[in-house]
Length: 594
Picture (cartoon, rainbow, N blue to C red):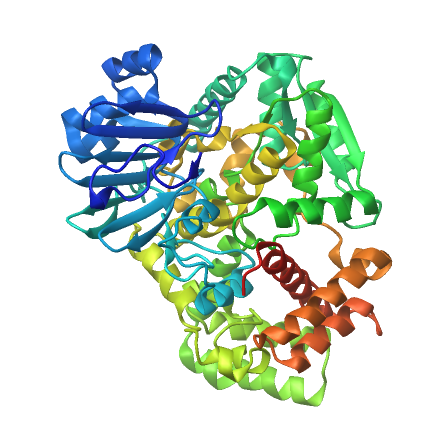
């Protein structure tokens, strides 16, 4: 569904612009004073509302829930959704998205009301909304390689965060949150009992995902990691031999995971369809990504995600099952463990740390530069930074380094502290003192809602398939919040609880596999594929005229891409940044903005 001027008619100045469905997922309802539109796969916890949704559609159920319960309607609504309600009688507009942020909702305040829609392009199309880009939005994109909520790349436009709703009433717009992860820091349950419950919940969730279509029309992403392998395993238990799983391979050592995917597929007896990407796939995917996203998007793993979904569609798949969410719910990011190491270091007596260890490392580094001394300095550097800031310390666009990469005139127009301030705001909304749960809560918004879900859903849509995320079922979400940090990471073991819960279900190789990710070989491809190398160089050269990045920094990125020397750690970082700038400039050219 998309935002377009007056699709349902004005219902007072405050009504602004309503949203309408653009595909079969959507449902609309209208009567004398109420206009309702909803998209996605809502789940009603109230039996009467379920019946109304079945008989008359989800929009009619939402209208009844609103009339009877007002904003308490959220207590009866779960699942995957974005909706808008225009109440003409009360001159009131409400818009919201689901608990985990699988959908988007953009909005812009205008005289007398608000314009809103599920795409930035839809909101931008309204004549009262500016198409000017926001310097802060551009900076935030460079910092995160995507546009994190609540901001957007457009001046005057914002978007809702997960579990957030908007109310426009009496000409004023306010937002609030209708749900928070119900984290608990202790439990009386044993890890074995919790593991059994998790397995049952995930199996049921996968079963509901399979109910979306005939199993023959459903496929699954399979990287060979814990989460995608779990999804494939349950698919095969429920509908053996009827669903295919798809893997993207790279013919470059260190990047290819098809071996692990093959092990998982063989273990469960799944139909496995690996596909090795080509240079043509890459250039085609870049063009489609630039065209598909309503805001610039730099995560290079969108490329294999699109290609995988495209191959699935070519094989008759209409719905893909994805394993996203496992890391953010069950402590799967390496920093969750590493931060515990930093905490133990900081627990040492200050006189030992500051009076002996750190001076010794500094002196040793001055006398003998080596990989060990660099690692030791970096360890101390990160250990001396508070937890929330640690992931941002090495960011090329962070507060400490922005002056060296941004043009002074552009730097003067942005607030380099905003990314950290927004992260702290997410932490402040977390009802727990557990450091790991607080970090997972940040990742649910920044890593999952702002990044991975945007990537997977949009690339599947572009390929012509739907996507379902069984880990993000509301029952799984609420259960995950009850597992304390000590259970999730027993003995500081990454995904320790999860691995124990699925130890006799997943292949041993999957359990022992090192975390990899779903990226592309950006460095070797940018140097080895002339079309990509030339495109990056041309886009960086074009971007130079915008007065955002210093010429010296742009030249450093171009040099890293051209590969005039053996790559080092900084070269990898520069090439990654060059990819982001290439995608930003391509998007700005495509949209004719900036």
